[in-house]
Length: 103
Image 1 (spheres, helix red, strand yellow):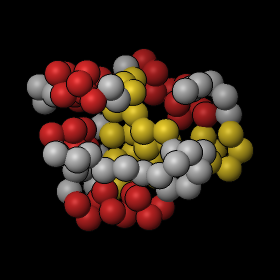
Image 2: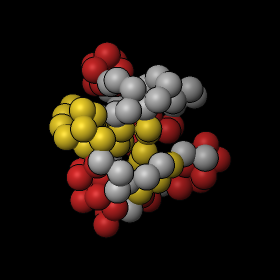
Image 3: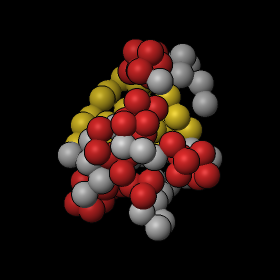
């Protein structure tokens, strides 16, 4: 996962909620090469028995600060999910042409 490599027609999807409708809407909008960043209450999908998938070729990353704030560190480690720190957000934004948020 390279946060610096710019891709011309991809989107960064900010998923701020673990609500089923928000997750389903995000799943419908993502495309190959996109990245889904789960932050705020979006990181709570880790607590589900089967966290949602977003398809092949879609990077899924979780915000470390929000995982820590919600006591999900052990779940994140056990699930071996990709985690980004707050300082990594600007390069992640620069990597994509578009940014879409949903909650």
